[in-house]
Image 1 (cartoon, rainbow, N blue to C red):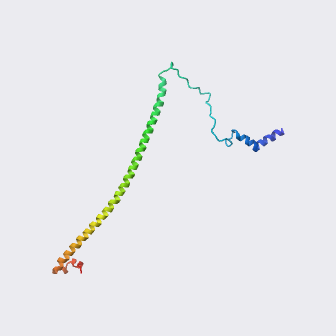
Image 2: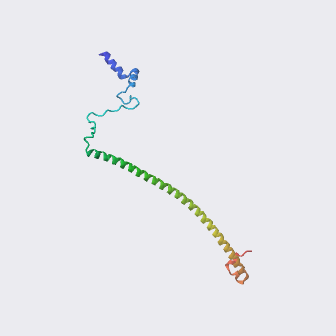
Image 3: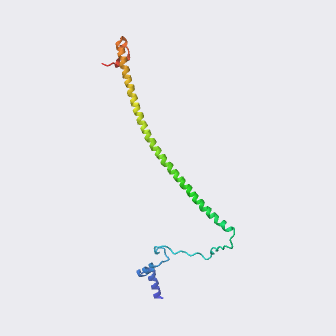
Length: 158
């Protein structure tokens, strides 16, 4: 009994030679498992194999069983097509909206600049008109005796 115990003990401790031999094959522990695909499981015996169809025993029930599968696949394909079309539409709309927004902001900036230029020109024109009228009025008022009483007399050129 003593030698069997020592043998089992050495096994439980795990000598390097024993480990090497064990690693070559598959062990029950998941940690020791070799990397690679697992073996395929066989079909359970309780499930009977599908019956072979005979041309003589054809009934109206067989196509009924097949039809829903076909319709299912057709529906699936149809839904996939619809979803892809919707996604494409959304993407196109996004692209258009971003492009439109960019162009819109650009045009806005341009219009603002244009308005600023126009306002500047209008102000210059107003100033020119004011200066022109002032000069004429001053000349008119300086000729008469009332010029000293008029407020435009203060803006007269020296």
